[in-house]
Length: 498
Image (cartoon, rainbow, N blue to C red):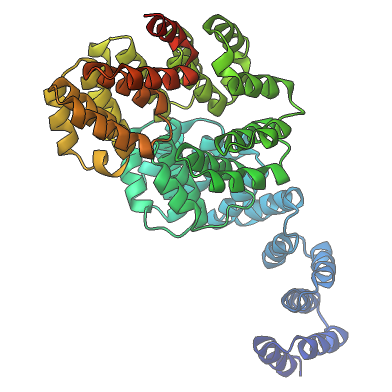
C-alpha cells in the first residue's frame, strides 16, 4: 500500500498538485513502520512544502528529519537551500555536508557561501586541495577580493575555458594590475554581452579611456539602479561632452539616493555648466569645502593668480578624493598659467588606467615647451582619438604648420570630434601663410560653435585683425579675451594707452 501511495504522491507532485500530495504524505506518516521510511516521507513533505512556497513548514520537517538522521545529505542540501539569504546559518551546514560526502560539488557550495560572507581567508585554506581545479572560480574570487590579483589571474588563466562570470573576473583582475594588453583581449570577448554586470564593467573601462560617447551609449542599455559609481561616471561622461541635461539627470538621481558630497559637487558643476548658478550653490551649501571651491570657480575671473594659487593649494586633500574637482582645478590652473600647481594636482594618487591624467600631463609638457617628453607620450597614446587634438596642439605650439596641416587632413577624428577647435588650427595655418582674411573667416566660423575655447579664439582674432591693420576690431577681441582671462588685462591696458 505504501508503494502505491508513494507512486500516486510522486505523480501529483510532478503535476504541481501539492495540496493533494501533502495529504497523501500525512497518511503515509501515519502508517509508516520504520525510521528510514519515516525519514524519507518527512523529506518528501519538506520538499513539497518548499515547492508550494511554504518555507516555514518545509524547514519544520527538515529539522525534524535531521534530529533523527543528522547525516541525511539530501535533507542538508534542502535545508541550505531553504535558509535562503541567511548565509551565516547556511555555512556550517554546507561544511557539515562536505565533511560527510567529501564531494567536490559540496566543497564548491561551501566555498561559494564563504565568499558570499566575505570569509575569503577561509576559502583559500582549501586552495591546494584536490578540488583546486574544480573550485577554481571560488579560489580566484577569494584571491581577487584579498587583492592578491596575481594569484587570481594565474588560477583563471590555467583553465582551458572560462564562463562569462570568470571572464569578467579575469577582466577585473587585469584591470586591477593595469595589464592593458590582456584587458583589451578580454574586453573584445565580452563586448557582445548583454549581461548588465559586464556592461557596467565595460563602462568603467571606456570611461578611463575617455571614450565618453560610448559610455553614454552603453549606459542607456541597462538599468543602473543600485550602481552609484557607474551612474556617477555616466553623469561625468555627459558633463565632459557638454550634454548638460543628461548630466543633471544622472547626478540628480544620485543625490536623491545618496548623501555624498562628491555627487553633490558634480551636480553643482552641471548646474554651473548650464548657467544655473543659484542651483549650483544650493547643491553644495551644506559642505564648506565644496562651497569654497565652487565660489572660487564662479568668481575666478575676478581673482588674482596669487590668490588662486593659495586657494587651490589649500584644497589638495579634497582633490585627492575627487578627480572631478581635481580636473576642474587643473583646467583653471592651466588657463591662468599656474602650471606648477596643475602638475602637482595630476601627481596625486589615482587610478593608473585613467587617461585623463595622461592627457593633462601631455598638455602641460606642451605648454612648458617640453616637446620631447610630450612626444614620447603622444607616440604611446596617440592612437586614441581623445589625444588627436593634443597632437595638433603639439605641432601648433612649435609653429610647425606644414605638419599640422598634414595631420588635420589625415585623421577622421579631427572631422568628427572637435570641429570648433580644428577651426582654430586651420586659422593658425592660414595665418602662417599670410592669408589673414581667410584666417579671420575660419576663426569666426569656429567661434560660432565654440563651447570651451572662446578666449583662445578671441586672442587669435586679436592677432589676425592686428595683421590687417583693423585696430578697432583687434581691441574689441582683446577686451573679450580679457573678460574671460584677467591675466590679459595688463596687455589690454597697454593696448588702450597707445
